[in-house]
Length: 247
Image (tube, rainbow, N blue to C red; front, side, top):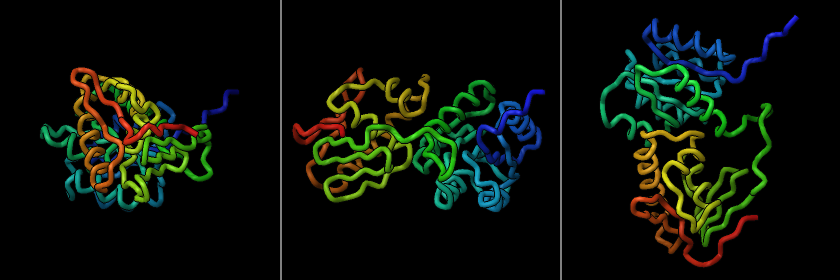
């Protein structure tokens, strides 16, 4: 007798449309995920503690709260990756969602295979939960680029004496840049390292995160590493001195 496979991860689907919700729940369960379903923002907040999901799939057009507001709220109460999945046609939504902490943005209608690939990519880069069955932390424990120190295993970055407050996506992007300091990385290379895949929509998303990282690096006022744009090529992280090392 073949034993059933254990669930790969748990996902909370926040979707008020019954037909869409049923499609998502069925597809995710068929892919061996454990799935919880919330019909609105209040329901989602109530289920967070009980379900303790590994990922939240969030619609933006909910009956009781704007999904962007809910995205920010959920990020403040649970360190869980969020994938926005919406039929909203507002051009500003992807940028706002990423600024508020979303890890990916998918417009409806979507291909299920593409959505599942994105979910897998987001889960792969999510930090391990305590007691979970996850891969060990990376062997590189420190990345130094001038006055910048990035500690991937501890998910911490400091500039001089000051800690940097970064979203999970910003931290991953900074880690990739620091690991390849003084090397030009294309947008596709950065997207593949940060999200696990690259497509035509990722270039603008990378640009948004680069702008925010630059602002945070410059905020402290001290001379430090700079993210340099290489026209038609990509970006590179340049140190404020020659001290670039990995421990």
